Image (cartoon, rainbow, N blue to C red):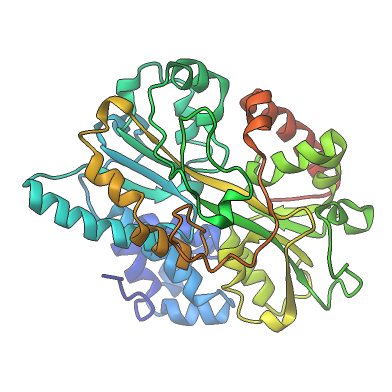
Length: 411
């Protein structure tokens, strides 16, 4: 059940859930980390009042807080951030895009209750936000040497460490995993050849990234833009994308590198003003702050959270909405043991739950509310197979970050 938080004071909230300070810091409330500020304001200031005073997007921020509380609800559940090796004790690990995590978790929790009652057992699983582990858990994957160190089922997001050479050589090349992707994909995803031709990854869904423009800040922005338009020099320090110190979204940078090569990445670094969580982008767009950037690369899920949609145009550029994949690895030798679980994960019912949150499903019978978003820009398996993904990402990062800081970007 969703925890009611708005009427709690900041002091009550952080006393009961001290780990929420990380969410506070990511959304402009970091001052409450200081003991003197917490002591002075915390006992009197309610969360709802603080959100209104700072123009924080209520629904998005509460969703992030409740996600964090849900992740810590079971004290017996391992925390990957602190002890990534504990993943070996899990049957299912799911690292999902923000926005997809909550509806997925609700549906999966209901399934697990029925599963545990039927089998008179307790299934060990963990569902968390992918963004929490891009610089922690995925780095740990590079050091894993034995298949036994991995959960039986792993759901992950973006072009992550499971695509890197070390993982490819140790595990993918040994065909440890079974591809359970439906033979007939949903028509929305079939157009981009989404199925893994090497039959290792089971493709489930996608996080679709679009371009949002604040109309009054860029009145001359093209009505039907190309992604290349934001690389123009006149848009220096004009773009916000998902990122943090020394890390920006690979799901965006890799397609730019594929199409526009190193120069495109360098120009992108010049164009980007800052990197923040998409929830913070929504807050920026809905604020009356004159200093906010005019252009945002963000998930379609979060674009739908913008309150003042009359202020913006949501663009699908000519090359397409960028497809950041949501994929699953299932150990081949565990197929019989986990068949009930994978049947649910691949079901029409769960697919529709995710689709209704604007994460299109590959299931052929699911109605994707994102069907109108066309075309789709997917890196493609030929490209993924032709490059050293890990090395390419590091090369991109070096070029991007140098240009970003030289051009006055800041995080």
